[in-house]
Length: 469
Image 1 (cartoon, one colour):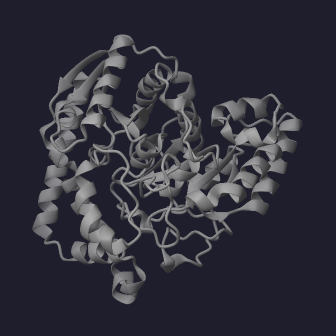
Image 2 (cartoon, helix red, strand yellow):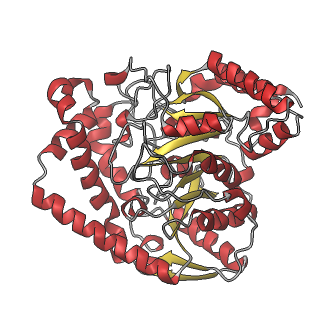
Protein backbone atom coordinates (compact mmCIF):
# COMPACT_ATOMS: atom_id res chain seq x y z
CA UNK A 1 0.00 0.00 0.00
CA UNK A 2 1.21 3.50 -0.85
CA UNK A 3 2.02 5.23 2.44
CA UNK A 4 0.13 8.35 1.36
CA UNK A 5 -3.09 6.30 1.17
CA UNK A 6 -2.89 5.05 4.77
CA UNK A 7 -4.64 8.08 6.38
CA UNK A 8 -7.73 7.42 4.27
CA UNK A 9 -8.34 4.07 5.95
CA UNK A 10 -10.79 3.83 8.80
CA UNK A 11 -9.22 3.02 12.15
CA UNK A 12 -10.66 -0.50 12.15
CA UNK A 13 -9.30 -1.17 8.65
CA UNK A 14 -5.88 0.14 9.61
CA UNK A 15 -5.98 -1.89 12.83
CA UNK A 16 -6.48 -5.12 10.92
CA UNK A 17 -3.63 -4.30 8.54
CA UNK A 18 -1.31 -3.55 11.46
CA UNK A 19 -2.36 -6.77 13.21
CA UNK A 20 -1.61 -8.76 10.05
CA UNK A 21 1.71 -6.90 9.61
CA UNK A 22 0.70 -5.55 6.21
CA UNK A 23 1.18 -1.97 7.45
CA UNK A 24 3.62 -1.01 10.18
CA UNK A 25 2.79 1.46 12.98
CA UNK A 26 5.79 3.53 11.88
CA UNK A 27 4.50 3.75 8.31
CA UNK A 28 1.05 4.76 9.55
CA UNK A 29 2.39 7.36 11.96
CA UNK A 30 4.70 8.87 9.37
CA UNK A 31 1.82 9.03 6.90
CA UNK A 32 -0.36 10.95 9.33
CA UNK A 33 2.45 13.28 10.42
CA UNK A 34 3.26 14.05 6.79
CA UNK A 35 -0.38 14.77 6.08
CA UNK A 36 -0.67 17.04 9.12
CA UNK A 37 2.39 18.96 7.91
CA UNK A 38 0.96 19.23 4.40
CA UNK A 39 -2.67 20.19 4.94
CA UNK A 40 -3.53 21.13 8.54
CA UNK A 41 -2.98 24.80 7.70
CA UNK A 42 -6.39 24.56 6.00
CA UNK A 43 -8.19 23.12 9.01
CA UNK A 44 -6.32 24.25 12.17
CA UNK A 45 -7.21 20.95 13.79
CA UNK A 46 -4.12 20.68 16.00
CA UNK A 47 -2.77 22.91 18.74
CA UNK A 48 0.22 20.64 19.40
CA UNK A 49 1.76 17.87 17.28
CA UNK A 50 3.89 15.33 19.16
CA UNK A 51 6.13 14.26 16.26
CA UNK A 52 9.08 12.87 18.23
CA UNK A 53 6.99 11.12 20.88
CA UNK A 54 4.62 9.71 18.26
CA UNK A 55 7.43 8.20 16.18
CA UNK A 56 9.02 6.69 19.28
CA UNK A 57 5.71 5.15 20.35
CA UNK A 58 5.20 3.82 16.82
CA UNK A 59 8.64 2.18 16.83
CA UNK A 60 7.87 0.56 20.19
CA UNK A 61 4.53 -0.69 18.88
CA UNK A 62 6.16 -2.12 15.78
CA UNK A 63 8.75 -4.02 17.83
CA UNK A 64 6.10 -5.36 20.22
CA UNK A 65 3.89 -6.61 17.40
CA UNK A 66 6.86 -8.18 15.61
CA UNK A 67 7.71 -10.27 18.68
CA UNK A 68 4.09 -11.39 19.17
CA UNK A 69 3.03 -8.84 21.75
CA UNK A 70 -0.05 -7.55 19.93
CA UNK A 71 -2.28 -5.73 22.43
CA UNK A 72 -5.54 -5.41 20.50
CA UNK A 73 -7.38 -3.22 18.00
CA UNK A 74 -5.77 0.09 18.98
CA UNK A 75 -2.19 -1.17 18.96
CA UNK A 76 -0.10 1.01 16.64
CA UNK A 77 -3.10 3.10 15.53
CA UNK A 78 -2.37 6.88 15.37
CA UNK A 79 -4.88 8.90 17.40
CA UNK A 80 -5.32 12.42 18.72
CA UNK A 81 -7.11 13.83 21.76
CA UNK A 82 -8.83 17.06 22.62
CA UNK A 83 -6.49 19.48 24.39
CA UNK A 84 -8.77 19.34 27.41
CA UNK A 85 -6.96 16.17 28.55
CA UNK A 86 -3.67 16.20 30.38
CA UNK A 87 -0.77 14.63 28.52
CA UNK A 88 2.49 14.12 30.39
CA UNK A 89 5.24 16.42 29.19
CA UNK A 90 3.04 17.90 26.45
CA UNK A 91 1.41 21.31 26.54
CA UNK A 92 -2.27 21.03 27.51
CA UNK A 93 -4.08 24.35 27.11
CA UNK A 94 -7.79 23.62 27.38
CA UNK A 95 -8.05 25.93 24.39
CA UNK A 96 -7.26 28.92 26.61
CA UNK A 97 -4.41 31.42 26.65
CA UNK A 98 -4.61 31.24 30.44
CA UNK A 99 -3.02 27.77 30.20
CA UNK A 100 -0.92 28.43 27.12
CA UNK A 101 2.24 27.18 28.87
CA UNK A 102 0.75 24.46 31.10
CA UNK A 103 2.61 21.14 30.84
CA UNK A 104 1.15 18.37 33.05
CA UNK A 105 3.38 15.97 34.96
CA UNK A 106 1.06 13.03 34.29
CA UNK A 107 -1.39 11.74 31.71
CA UNK A 108 -5.12 11.89 32.11
CA UNK A 109 -6.53 8.40 32.59
CA UNK A 110 -8.01 8.43 29.09
CA UNK A 111 -4.62 9.22 27.53
CA UNK A 112 -2.94 6.65 29.78
CA UNK A 113 -5.51 4.05 28.71
CA UNK A 114 -4.90 4.81 25.03
CA UNK A 115 -1.17 4.35 25.53
CA UNK A 116 -1.77 1.16 27.50
CA UNK A 117 -3.78 -0.14 24.53
CA UNK A 118 -0.80 0.62 22.29
CA UNK A 119 -2.24 3.64 20.49
CA UNK A 120 0.15 6.26 19.11
CA UNK A 121 -0.63 9.82 20.26
CA UNK A 122 -0.15 12.19 17.32
CA UNK A 123 -1.04 15.33 19.25
CA UNK A 124 -3.62 17.54 20.88
CA UNK A 125 -6.68 18.81 19.04
CA UNK A 126 -7.91 22.37 18.97
CA UNK A 127 -11.02 23.28 20.98
CA UNK A 128 -13.13 26.18 22.15
CA UNK A 129 -11.97 27.84 25.34
CA UNK A 130 -12.28 25.46 28.30
CA UNK A 131 -15.08 23.63 26.43
CA UNK A 132 -17.68 25.89 28.03
CA UNK A 133 -18.48 27.75 24.81
CA UNK A 134 -19.45 26.21 21.50
CA UNK A 135 -17.99 28.97 19.37
CA UNK A 136 -14.89 31.00 20.22
CA UNK A 137 -11.29 29.83 19.85
CA UNK A 138 -8.37 31.53 21.56
CA UNK A 139 -5.66 30.33 19.18
CA UNK A 140 -6.72 29.43 15.62
CA UNK A 141 -10.21 28.79 14.26
CA UNK A 142 -10.79 25.24 12.93
CA UNK A 143 -12.44 24.83 9.53
CA UNK A 144 -14.89 22.22 8.30
CA UNK A 145 -13.48 19.91 5.57
CA UNK A 146 -16.87 19.83 3.86
CA UNK A 147 -16.77 23.60 3.37
CA UNK A 148 -13.90 25.68 4.76
CA UNK A 149 -16.17 28.66 5.37
CA UNK A 150 -18.21 26.67 7.88
CA UNK A 151 -17.64 25.54 11.46
CA UNK A 152 -16.79 21.91 12.22
CA UNK A 153 -18.72 22.29 15.50
CA UNK A 154 -17.61 22.83 19.08
CA UNK A 155 -16.35 22.43 21.61
CA UNK A 156 -14.40 19.42 20.24
CA UNK A 157 -13.89 21.39 17.04
CA UNK A 158 -10.36 20.25 16.27
CA UNK A 159 -11.38 16.63 16.75
CA UNK A 160 -14.21 17.12 14.28
CA UNK A 161 -12.03 18.88 11.71
CA UNK A 162 -9.01 16.62 12.20
CA UNK A 163 -10.88 13.34 12.01
CA UNK A 164 -12.95 14.40 8.99
CA UNK A 165 -9.81 15.67 7.23
CA UNK A 166 -8.00 12.33 7.75
CA UNK A 167 -5.44 13.84 10.13
CA UNK A 168 -5.81 11.00 12.66
CA UNK A 169 -7.30 7.53 12.51
CA UNK A 170 -9.72 8.27 15.35
CA UNK A 171 -9.93 10.79 18.18
CA UNK A 172 -11.15 11.34 21.72
CA UNK A 173 -13.13 14.42 22.69
CA UNK A 174 -15.37 15.54 25.54
CA UNK A 175 -19.10 16.21 25.69
CA UNK A 176 -20.85 18.45 28.22
CA UNK A 177 -23.91 19.47 26.24
CA UNK A 178 -23.16 17.92 22.85
CA UNK A 179 -19.49 18.62 22.19
CA UNK A 180 -18.84 15.16 20.74
CA UNK A 181 -22.06 14.72 18.81
CA UNK A 182 -22.41 18.22 17.37
CA UNK A 183 -18.95 18.24 15.69
CA UNK A 184 -19.68 14.75 14.45
CA UNK A 185 -23.01 15.77 12.92
CA UNK A 186 -21.61 18.92 11.32
CA UNK A 187 -18.43 17.17 10.09
CA UNK A 188 -19.97 13.93 8.78
CA UNK A 189 -18.59 11.70 11.55
CA UNK A 190 -19.65 9.31 14.30
CA UNK A 191 -19.55 10.79 17.79
CA UNK A 192 -20.30 8.64 20.83
CA UNK A 193 -21.12 10.06 24.25
CA UNK A 194 -21.09 7.09 26.65
CA UNK A 195 -23.07 7.09 29.85
CA UNK A 196 -21.77 9.26 32.69
CA UNK A 197 -19.21 7.20 34.61
CA UNK A 198 -18.22 4.82 31.81
CA UNK A 199 -14.96 6.72 31.09
CA UNK A 200 -12.71 8.28 33.73
CA UNK A 201 -12.44 12.05 33.77
CA UNK A 202 -9.28 12.15 35.86
CA UNK A 203 -6.90 14.68 34.33
CA UNK A 204 -9.62 16.34 32.25
CA UNK A 205 -10.18 20.08 32.62
CA UNK A 206 -13.81 20.27 33.79
CA UNK A 207 -16.63 22.10 32.09
CA UNK A 208 -19.61 20.94 34.16
CA UNK A 209 -18.88 18.22 36.72
CA UNK A 210 -22.34 16.67 36.52
CA UNK A 211 -22.41 16.33 32.72
CA UNK A 212 -18.84 16.09 31.34
CA UNK A 213 -18.21 12.82 29.46
CA UNK A 214 -15.29 11.62 27.32
CA UNK A 215 -15.84 9.64 24.14
CA UNK A 216 -14.74 9.00 20.56
CA UNK A 217 -15.12 11.02 17.40
CA UNK A 218 -14.49 8.63 14.53
CA UNK A 219 -15.12 8.04 10.84
CA UNK A 220 -17.22 4.93 11.43
CA UNK A 221 -19.19 3.17 14.15
CA UNK A 222 -16.70 0.32 14.42
CA UNK A 223 -13.92 2.87 14.89
CA UNK A 224 -15.93 4.49 17.68
CA UNK A 225 -16.51 1.08 19.29
CA UNK A 226 -12.83 0.13 19.46
CA UNK A 227 -11.85 3.63 20.62
CA UNK A 228 -14.44 3.59 23.40
CA UNK A 229 -13.32 0.14 24.53
CA UNK A 230 -9.76 1.42 24.85
CA UNK A 231 -10.58 4.40 27.08
CA UNK A 232 -13.48 3.01 29.15
CA UNK A 233 -13.29 1.32 32.52
CA UNK A 234 -13.13 1.78 36.25
CA UNK A 235 -10.53 4.19 37.60
CA UNK A 236 -9.84 4.57 41.35
CA UNK A 237 -8.73 8.15 40.60
CA UNK A 238 -12.30 8.90 39.52
CA UNK A 239 -14.73 7.50 42.12
CA UNK A 240 -17.68 8.13 39.82
CA UNK A 241 -16.55 5.56 37.24
CA UNK A 242 -18.44 2.28 37.08
CA UNK A 243 -16.67 -0.70 38.61
CA UNK A 244 -18.02 -3.05 35.94
CA UNK A 245 -16.37 -4.89 33.04
CA UNK A 246 -16.00 -3.04 29.73
CA UNK A 247 -17.95 -4.87 27.00
CA UNK A 248 -16.49 -5.80 23.64
CA UNK A 249 -18.40 -3.09 21.82
CA UNK A 250 -17.22 -4.14 18.37
CA UNK A 251 -18.61 -7.64 18.90
CA UNK A 252 -22.11 -6.16 19.24
CA UNK A 253 -22.03 -4.74 15.70
CA UNK A 254 -23.76 -7.63 13.99
CA UNK A 255 -26.34 -5.65 12.01
CA UNK A 256 -29.27 -7.46 13.60
CA UNK A 257 -31.86 -5.05 14.98
CA UNK A 258 -35.00 -6.98 14.05
CA UNK A 259 -37.58 -6.78 16.83
CA UNK A 260 -35.99 -3.78 18.50
CA UNK A 261 -38.21 -0.81 19.35
CA UNK A 262 -37.22 2.68 18.23
CA UNK A 263 -39.03 5.69 19.68
CA UNK A 264 -38.79 8.80 17.52
CA UNK A 265 -39.15 11.89 19.72
CA UNK A 266 -42.15 13.67 18.22
CA UNK A 267 -41.25 17.14 19.56
CA UNK A 268 -37.95 16.89 17.68
CA UNK A 269 -39.11 15.62 14.29
CA UNK A 270 -41.99 18.11 14.14
CA UNK A 271 -39.99 21.08 15.38
CA UNK A 272 -40.94 24.46 13.95
CA UNK A 273 -37.40 25.82 14.38
CA UNK A 274 -35.62 22.95 12.65
CA UNK A 275 -34.39 23.03 9.07
CA UNK A 276 -36.85 20.99 6.95
CA UNK A 277 -33.92 19.31 5.17
CA UNK A 278 -32.66 18.02 8.50
CA UNK A 279 -36.07 16.74 9.54
CA UNK A 280 -36.60 15.00 6.19
CA UNK A 281 -33.21 13.28 6.46
CA UNK A 282 -33.84 12.10 10.02
CA UNK A 283 -37.34 10.81 9.26
CA UNK A 284 -35.94 8.97 6.23
CA UNK A 285 -33.25 7.47 8.49
CA UNK A 286 -35.85 6.14 10.92
CA UNK A 287 -37.63 4.50 7.99
CA UNK A 288 -34.38 2.72 7.15
CA UNK A 289 -34.33 1.36 10.70
CA UNK A 290 -37.87 0.15 10.15
CA UNK A 291 -36.79 -1.53 6.94
CA UNK A 292 -34.09 -3.37 8.91
CA UNK A 293 -36.77 -4.95 11.09
CA UNK A 294 -37.06 -2.51 13.98
CA UNK A 295 -40.43 -1.29 15.19
CA UNK A 296 -40.50 2.50 14.77
CA UNK A 297 -43.08 4.85 16.26
CA UNK A 298 -43.24 8.33 17.69
CA UNK A 299 -43.06 9.04 21.42
CA UNK A 300 -43.62 12.32 23.24
CA UNK A 301 -41.04 13.80 25.64
CA UNK A 302 -42.53 17.24 26.34
CA UNK A 303 -39.56 18.72 28.19
CA UNK A 304 -37.18 17.84 25.35
CA UNK A 305 -37.99 21.15 23.68
CA UNK A 306 -36.46 22.93 26.70
CA UNK A 307 -33.22 20.93 26.86
CA UNK A 308 -30.91 23.75 25.76
CA UNK A 309 -32.40 26.20 28.27
CA UNK A 310 -31.92 23.75 31.14
CA UNK A 311 -28.44 22.71 30.07
CA UNK A 312 -27.32 26.23 29.23
CA UNK A 313 -28.07 27.56 32.67
CA UNK A 314 -26.37 24.64 34.41
CA UNK A 315 -23.27 25.16 32.26
CA UNK A 316 -23.23 28.87 33.07
CA UNK A 317 -23.55 28.38 36.85
CA UNK A 318 -21.26 25.38 37.32
CA UNK A 319 -18.51 26.72 35.06
CA UNK A 320 -18.66 30.09 36.82
CA UNK A 321 -18.21 28.32 40.15
CA UNK A 322 -15.17 26.43 38.88
CA UNK A 323 -13.54 29.48 37.26
CA UNK A 324 -14.45 31.99 39.97
CA UNK A 325 -10.86 32.71 41.06
CA UNK A 326 -9.53 33.15 37.53
CA UNK A 327 -12.50 35.35 36.66
CA UNK A 328 -11.63 37.63 39.57
CA UNK A 329 -7.92 37.73 38.75
CA UNK A 330 -7.69 37.31 34.96
CA UNK A 331 -11.06 38.12 33.44
CA UNK A 332 -9.56 39.91 30.41
CA UNK A 333 -7.60 36.80 29.46
CA UNK A 334 -10.83 34.94 28.66
CA UNK A 335 -12.54 35.21 25.30
CA UNK A 336 -15.31 37.79 25.11
CA UNK A 337 -18.13 35.24 25.04
CA UNK A 338 -16.72 33.42 28.07
CA UNK A 339 -16.34 36.70 29.92
CA UNK A 340 -20.05 37.32 29.41
CA UNK A 341 -21.05 33.73 30.18
CA UNK A 342 -18.97 33.38 33.33
CA UNK A 343 -20.04 36.75 34.72
CA UNK A 344 -23.67 35.93 33.99
CA UNK A 345 -23.38 32.52 35.59
CA UNK A 346 -21.88 34.01 38.72
CA UNK A 347 -24.97 36.13 39.44
CA UNK A 348 -27.71 33.57 38.75
CA UNK A 349 -29.92 33.41 41.87
CA UNK A 350 -29.82 30.19 43.87
CA UNK A 351 -33.57 29.69 43.48
CA UNK A 352 -33.21 29.72 39.69
CA UNK A 353 -30.44 27.11 39.81
CA UNK A 354 -32.60 25.02 42.14
CA UNK A 355 -35.57 25.20 39.77
CA UNK A 356 -33.43 24.20 36.80
CA UNK A 357 -32.14 21.18 38.73
CA UNK A 358 -35.76 20.15 39.31
CA UNK A 359 -36.49 20.56 35.60
CA UNK A 360 -33.45 18.44 34.83
CA UNK A 361 -34.80 15.68 37.04
CA UNK A 362 -38.21 15.86 35.37
CA UNK A 363 -36.64 15.68 31.89
CA UNK A 364 -34.47 12.75 32.93
CA UNK A 365 -37.54 10.96 34.30
CA UNK A 366 -39.39 11.47 30.99
CA UNK A 367 -36.45 10.07 29.01
CA UNK A 368 -35.98 7.06 31.28
CA UNK A 369 -39.73 6.38 31.26
CA UNK A 370 -39.70 6.31 27.45
CA UNK A 371 -36.69 3.99 27.49
CA UNK A 372 -38.64 1.50 29.57
CA UNK A 373 -40.78 0.93 26.47
CA UNK A 374 -38.24 1.55 23.69
CA UNK A 375 -34.75 0.13 23.20
CA UNK A 376 -33.51 3.43 21.78
CA UNK A 377 -34.82 6.92 21.05
CA UNK A 378 -34.05 8.81 17.83
CA UNK A 379 -33.98 12.49 16.87
CA UNK A 380 -31.80 14.98 14.97
CA UNK A 381 -28.36 15.64 16.45
CA UNK A 382 -28.69 19.27 15.45
CA UNK A 383 -31.76 20.93 14.04
CA UNK A 384 -29.63 22.61 11.39
CA UNK A 385 -26.39 22.02 9.54
CA UNK A 386 -23.09 23.74 10.33
CA UNK A 387 -23.12 27.55 10.49
CA UNK A 388 -20.66 29.85 8.81
CA UNK A 389 -17.56 30.72 10.81
CA UNK A 390 -17.72 34.06 12.57
CA UNK A 391 -14.22 35.50 12.82
CA UNK A 392 -15.02 37.84 15.73
CA UNK A 393 -15.99 36.47 19.12
CA UNK A 394 -17.87 39.74 19.70
CA UNK A 395 -20.17 38.77 16.86
CA UNK A 396 -20.34 35.23 18.24
CA UNK A 397 -21.53 36.43 21.62
CA UNK A 398 -24.02 38.99 20.47
CA UNK A 399 -25.58 37.23 17.53
CA UNK A 400 -24.49 33.72 16.61
CA UNK A 401 -24.96 32.12 20.01
CA UNK A 402 -28.52 33.40 20.24
CA UNK A 403 -29.18 32.05 16.75
CA UNK A 404 -27.46 28.68 17.19
CA UNK A 405 -28.35 27.46 20.69
CA UNK A 406 -31.98 26.55 19.89
CA UNK A 407 -30.72 24.26 17.13
CA UNK A 408 -28.52 22.12 19.39
CA UNK A 409 -30.51 18.99 20.26
CA UNK A 410 -27.94 17.02 22.23
CA UNK A 411 -27.98 18.16 25.84
CA UNK A 412 -31.02 16.14 26.97
CA UNK A 413 -28.86 13.04 27.22
CA UNK A 414 -26.13 14.78 29.21
CA UNK A 415 -28.89 15.84 31.57
CA UNK A 416 -30.23 12.29 31.68
CA UNK A 417 -26.76 10.65 31.81
CA UNK A 418 -27.68 8.24 29.01
CA UNK A 419 -25.38 7.11 26.17
CA UNK A 420 -25.97 8.77 22.81
CA UNK A 421 -24.37 8.59 19.38
CA UNK A 422 -24.53 10.75 16.26
CA UNK A 423 -24.21 8.99 12.91
CA UNK A 424 -24.29 10.61 9.44
CA UNK A 425 -27.72 10.40 7.78
CA UNK A 426 -27.50 12.64 4.73
CA UNK A 427 -26.55 16.04 3.36
CA UNK A 428 -28.22 19.37 2.81
CA UNK A 429 -28.57 20.82 -0.67
CA UNK A 430 -25.52 22.94 0.24
CA UNK A 431 -23.49 19.75 0.72
CA UNK A 432 -23.26 19.94 4.51
CA UNK A 433 -23.63 16.79 6.65
CA UNK A 434 -26.70 15.94 8.75
CA UNK A 435 -26.63 13.72 11.84
CA UNK A 436 -29.06 11.17 13.28
CA UNK A 437 -28.88 10.92 17.06
CA UNK A 438 -29.64 7.69 18.93
CA UNK A 439 -29.79 7.31 22.70
CA UNK A 440 -30.37 4.31 24.93
CA UNK A 441 -30.70 3.23 28.53
CA UNK A 442 -27.94 3.94 31.05
CA UNK A 443 -25.19 1.40 30.52
CA UNK A 444 -26.53 0.36 27.10
CA UNK A 445 -23.68 1.64 24.92
CA UNK A 446 -23.66 -1.69 23.09
CA UNK A 447 -27.30 -1.26 22.04
CA UNK A 448 -26.79 2.31 20.88
CA UNK A 449 -23.73 1.38 18.83
CA UNK A 450 -25.50 -1.69 17.42
CA UNK A 451 -28.39 0.37 16.06
CA UNK A 452 -26.08 3.07 14.72
CA UNK A 453 -23.91 0.49 12.97
CA UNK A 454 -26.89 -1.27 11.38
CA UNK A 455 -28.08 2.06 10.00
CA UNK A 456 -24.60 3.06 8.85
CA UNK A 457 -24.05 -0.15 6.93
CA UNK A 458 -27.43 0.13 5.20
CA UNK A 459 -26.69 3.63 3.87
CA UNK A 460 -23.91 5.28 1.82
CA UNK A 461 -23.22 8.36 3.92
CA UNK A 462 -20.17 6.99 5.75
CA UNK A 463 -18.42 6.30 2.44
CA UNK A 464 -18.43 9.91 1.28
CA UNK A 465 -15.28 12.01 1.44
CA UNK A 466 -15.15 15.75 2.20
CA UNK A 467 -14.22 17.74 -0.90
CA UNK A 468 -11.51 19.74 0.88
CA UNK A 469 -9.85 16.84 2.71
